[in-house]
Figure (cartoon, rainbow over the protein chains, first blue to last red):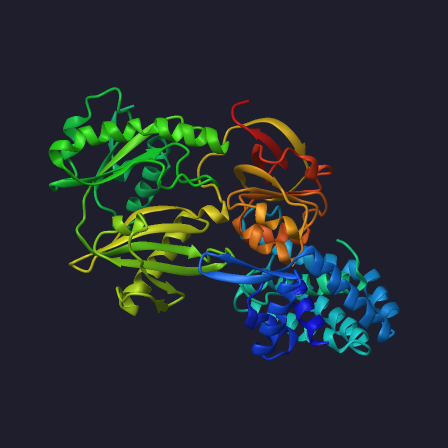
Length: 194
Length: 343
């Protein structure tokens, strides 16, 4: 079970160091490292070094293997119908978040036709957080691993009140990054492509 | 147009490097005094070289197209340090001649060729410490400051001969060079440069014995790809899509099919793909621009691209069929991908 947790953490994080993958999969760093090295020897993950920093990412084989394991887990839990229903209804909420992030970015870049007020952007994201609370409740009823998205997303929206970087920054658990992970998680769970 | 102007008055007609330094001086930053020779071939500028004062000079190229492009020309153009006053004129001529080497480089990478070369002549400092500061994280492109420092002048460090002390967000590693307070000062100054010039900046600095902090150069960080110079020349339009991230950048087109294809991607490439997932963020952080087949202005790829300040064009139907390796100019404001070079 731990092997699928680690592979899935790499999938949703995209590119991350061992400590972050351990945190995301709820495993001790040593255990996560062993599993990552094992997955690496099977050709499921690969380590890439950029300057003085490195991280793990999936290979196509690892992506396929992860989807196979997630599908088995999904059917064991009898949760396929609920995840399909969540993803099918995800569009409007996804658009709400993407549009709020986009309005704010275009405002910050100085190219918005009508500049957005941060308060309005955060009000939209807060509405999305309410929707997310409902989604997470439905998902976690059968798949515990979906727990935490609502808390992380809400935390980002709250922090953005004082530092607007928390809306879309790529270096922290910003509202957009958490949402991007959730979207990837849903797609991975059902083995669907973007 | 006069052949030579004070560095303080330099504008775009003096090339990108001199224009940035001129802007910094006018904004009150400490930059060693100097002059810019705009027209080396015309001659008549030789007497003006004495204006900055001092006995030795730094002579640097300032080409149009230099420093602002996705494909960095760093190190391609000549910089000469500790040039005695008597040899300054000869150094200016040799530096201007290096434009030919740069033309070869541009042809090899598909980058636009340099049109004209100006030369900066500055008073040489005798620093006790020097180095660079990056206002963006080199991998993620996120706002974060990296300061690298060596004892004395920076030329051996720039040549990669000495390992620097490195400060990442206030935490030091490596040799002991700067105090925490000095590192903070450098980081703050780099942040102010980014505020003035916009986008991630790669700042060269030096501290002299009197404790003064000087700026020697500032240019956009290559890996975040933001062009601070006039748009690169673009030719025939290859494809159009939804303009999803503003700005214009040039680079070789790299079609990346999937995860197993990541190793083919090089910093400064124009990333072309169907769609992106979180795994693609490190590529976006090093791309000159991004082009996707799917999405729209709200696509995840577009949001990440805007965050990283790189041009993005989405909804380009046959993007992954574009010619891999071709030099292109991506205009994320108009939504076009065009062949690099004159119309």
